[in-house]
Image (cartoon, rainbow, N blue to C red; front, side):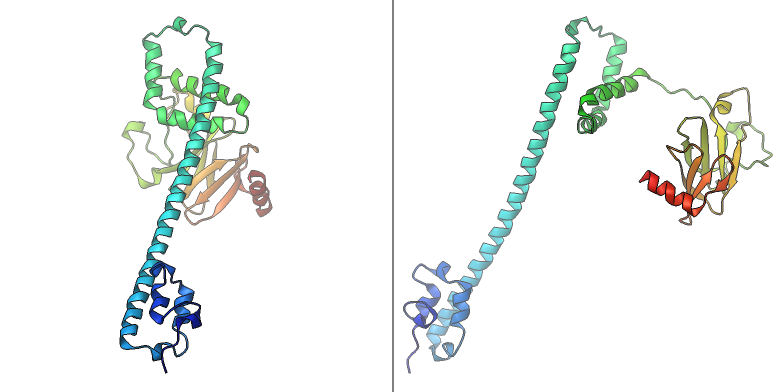
Length: 293
């Protein structure tokens, strides 16, 4: 019995035509190849036909693999293209906003020649140039903020505050140490100990009190006005709270002035009443978390 025709599998011509196809290897699809391998068709093929079939199937597999590789590369390039287009659109939006801001400020300063570019002005300009990346990031945050109409005014305030001062002056300095420490030497002469390490320092919302905490298992609260008094050599806290573990951080509640929250190295977060030195209840902590979130 002779070899059946490939037309049995939907292909015209002989079995070899079925693999190569009239239009070449590209015409042979995976489904047709699977159809070719079904039944007893292969058993009736000659050795020469089997060799040609093997070669043809290898070409089909290579062709399909190449198509898959090309598809992966194409999709990658499409992703890169879309990302660059989005980046370009974002930059274009920022340029449009910048043009509007420049136009607004230009209208507020009719004659820029009247601005005296003295040494003080140039020092301020240099500070901006040296921190241009930070200012750019700040401007973007303001430009995309919730109140676009006041973004330029807020950014102007930031620039003016940053360029207004050219140095920092030490106002107060004190030690975070045990109250019974008998070492009354000057700050510069104090002996360093591990217990003196401060890991967190926080001002309350009115900048009236400052809390410190660290390796020493205590939270200490100081009056800011008292710390500014340089006639006092030793500053003592107005409140001290004992803790069960070393503390890693502190944070004052921005809405309730006497609420202070702490976190220790045991993973415990505690809510404190800073006026009385008491740990708040679990209900208070839940209310605080709900209020903050």
